[in-house]
Image (cartoon, rainbow, N blue to C red; front, side, top):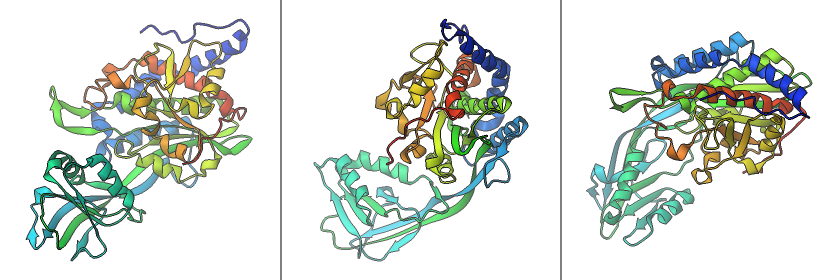
Length: 434
């Protein structure tokens, strides 16, 4: 694609716009962007799967980039890693009896965060999803109850049950500090006649596993207690169980090595400028693909009321539906974040648009969601045409599929559009807390 970031400079804005653009073009170089994203999406990173050697290697690389750029560790951390622990629970065995007869293992699905033993159904609600009922409605009602429940499912819902069984037989992940108050729900498929009694014994194996965001900061000069965060997740899917054309590594070049590359590049850019009035935080989030655990942990390590905004950068490796020199912002209407950014791009060819895919619910599908729920104007910037992106979450999401010009143009646009927020002159309106 032909690179045309600096096309239209208006007469009134010519001098300042040209100055800023020359600065951003000089400090954000395409060859460095290529080096970073090639490294993160290389086969030897093994797809950066959570809890793998690949994500460890990726974290080490990102640490090195932030350290070399001259950033400081986040408050309370001795290094650039923000360490925390998760607990992985693997189902070991389950035994259920109804009216004294043992239920086949194939007809059992259990939602629980730990082992338990019910000798009887005392204190347990027994619920039936009978033929003719709306399964989705019944299922939502069950999980809204917050109680111990034994759910008997009619065989007419076998397909629905099998989806549940496949889900609950996978390993579960929770924070080590979690209080495990999630309700215990036992789903059973079959016709059990006149229900009289039941017993359930369920055993899981729990393993503590380490995770780590990678975080660096540039302290603010006059407003050090006001934080502007730039983030993107550095994990992906790892090595797939089924190969495609002999390839099983889900490299995650666009998702989200492109966003992580932007975070690193912006960190270097602002460190070189050294003129930020607010404290800048650059974070590579972990475990986005398995539940957003990295951003959830990060949000608890600082006062959200002091976070001015979050630029979450997700999948900028290909041109947006609006064409070159464009990107979209999720939740555009929820604050004036996008309006501020576009104002700062006056005199350039780049434009930010509202999210064109509202049906995809993208605002709550990335690492901005946790801070947004806490009232922070936290938005995701992306260019991905997700409804038609056939490489998304496949082994074909590789460096060769990327448009590096698009990545560079988007990073430069974020650098230019963020400057008044970084300088403490503009403050995006807050989002109502959930």
